[in-house]
Picture 1 (cartoon, rainbow, N blue to C red):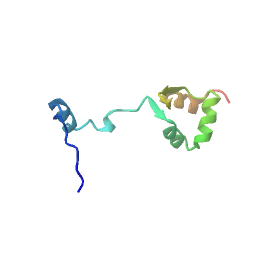
Picture 2 (picture 1 turned 135 degrees about the horizontal axis):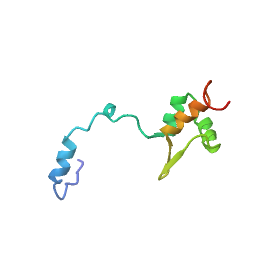
Picture 3 (picture 1 turned 120 degrees about the vertical axis):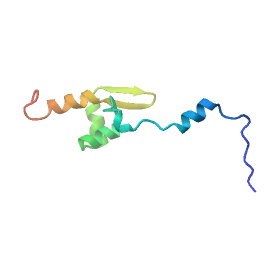
Picture 4 (picture 1 turned 180 degrees about the horizontal axis):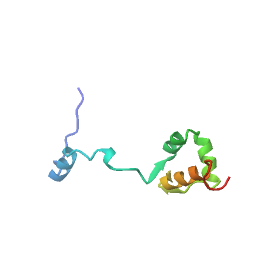
Length: 90
């Protein structure tokens, strides 16, 4: 028989209410400011290795939080405008 450790003290009421209250739906949050490398690679239909090379070449603005690296969404728009016909330099 498995014995489970009993909780020594009850959870605070505020924590219980926060857990019971549904979070706002993500579709109401709008466009995120930062995207993970996997999200950027998926949106641009490129491999992660190609994305890493582009980051190293300075094509994207990156933000490091802890051990994770995120790409600024605005830098993706600038990258696309630079590399599409009729936009920026060739």
